[in-house]
Image 1: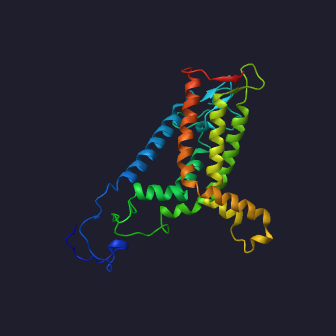
Image 2: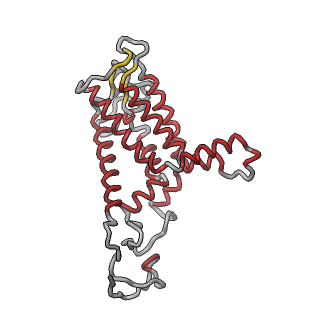
Length: 276
């Protein structure tokens, strides 16, 4: 396959620079290169749509019998929260309906995901088309990287990590509190498994973050002089190789956990109890 040459551009970067061959076709690839970007867009859109709706509906997010609380509403710190769902008290009064009850942490979690090194790759290629695929020219004539607004904001990822770390502790506390029986005392059901698996995977995703890896072993000149940090760095490095898989898995477990709590809270299904 061949393509007729076009006029050499007078400005631009990458494939549009003056030193590159001018090709009229966007790509000479004949395979379905657009499938992976399309799947990525669909996956991200499903999660964003679901999470947005569930964060605003303010229904079926708490199961009082077993103390199940969906992570989309944790921590619930407003007097608008249903009784029992505020594990850390009421820091705020009643909130208008246009403010999610989990508004304290949702911006930080969104910032952590948006600035994540893997998610940058995912939505840069699938949404921003920079580039959409190998050997496929991006539609942008210029690229300034992450040196100007808005992409320069990506550099604050390391600070969002600390917030995500704290939120993981909160989610762990919620999961522990959920081992609650109908009549008080210890209880154990299918919901506990769902909540616990979600928390474990959230910890794995958070600790596999590149920023966490740098905190563990960055700026060390001699690992031998810091055996504890070296050990932690090696463990985080192992997790880091699975960061992409954990990024997608936790999107799924977050929706699954919320969906399960919603079904039980709305009495659509009954929680399968092993210890009442």
